[in-house]
Length: 295
Image 1 (cartoon, helix red, strand yellow):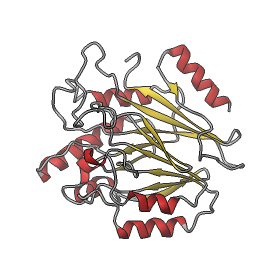
Image 2 (tube, helix red, strand yellow):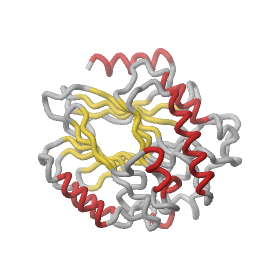
Image 3 (cartoon, one colour):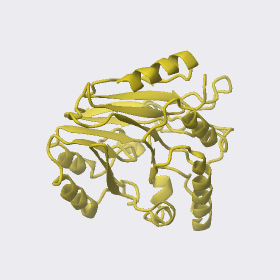
Image 4 (cartoon, helix red, strand yellow):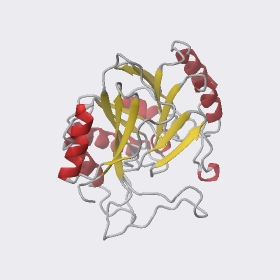
């Protein structure tokens, strides 16, 4: 794929720091006749957060947008996988933060930008404010032969997808061929990563069971503020870095306290990713980017 090679060469020459994680990932095979494309995943900007783990709390999201806009090749679309805003008990402040976030992301050059909630956005009001600003919390769309499914596992304060949404997922999947390329977006992991840290979905196994008969499924999620890769059978799950503060490795300490800010490397552990969908080589490549060049 000439475009993919050109972009990698550009990253190396320009020093933007893109890193290819993998290619030919298990469980990802895109059939012939589809156009190559790529999209960008950003996660956990936590707009409204203020605190010592990130003295640049009001600047990091804007810097990430500058970095996305500076990509040599603009993606087909951008997906924000939740926690757009930081939690607040005040419905007024919650809407204020969402309005501010929405205004900031207007600076993104890419025309198609999609959103889903995190628990910070939705768990205190069952997604009411999120829906007012961004629309549905779960939905599907298709792009160049790939079926995308957005699952809401945060609006329920008990970290449940819920029977109604699971029935919706089952009905949607019945419309897909078993070899259809399917990409799923969630905020929390669907599997039990560290349940005591809320890094799990209580009925996530039911969603995985529904997805399991399909041969080519990949899940992208946020929530844990770090790159992480996991397999449930043939289904690959990939967590994204956050845009506000990094969190410790799963189960590495008693609690999930944000990692301390390092003034020598102020944006260490923060970033976003690009995902290349390539038809001819039947592979999917994940490229990790820092928030800012040479960060």
